[in-house]
Length: 157
Ligand code: DLZ
Image (cartoon, rainbow, N blue to C red):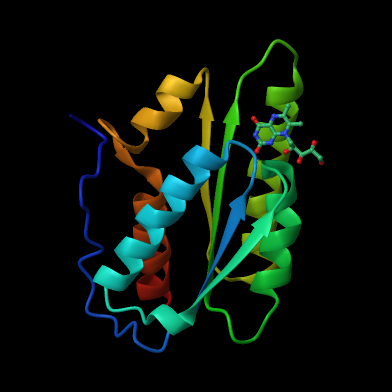
């Protein structure tokens, strides 16, 4: 299926054993975000990242990912930040505000800190779509977010 990364690899020669990653996990839609987290960690470990070099921080919801990411990216000992969340559309425009704010916020973190801050946020119309992208038939976007972080570090060198 086009656009679906299954058990993907960053295919990089970069030595990741000393790179440190922060993973920020939104607690809203926990069932989904925990699956994204598992996918991200599995992928980092498979690429040679040490378990002790992965820092996890929870934030209440996806809206809070921006500040969580900024705090982590500002730390000297963190090389890249992976933001994981899941926003599911409801009956009000809340969805649009959160999605726009977090997308813009995480972009700002990249620019301000010059460190990769990866947008691993599902923005779906329903829970079924989210499950499909959190280890279901469309892969695991947490895993893809981890690969993206590694690829960005490899580009930086
Ligand atoms: C309030 C809210 C709603 C309605 N939906 C979601 C959601 O689907 N996914 C998510 O991660 N967070 C949601 N939130 C919480 C907001 O992200 C945020 O935590 C609150 O608005 C407080 O700032």
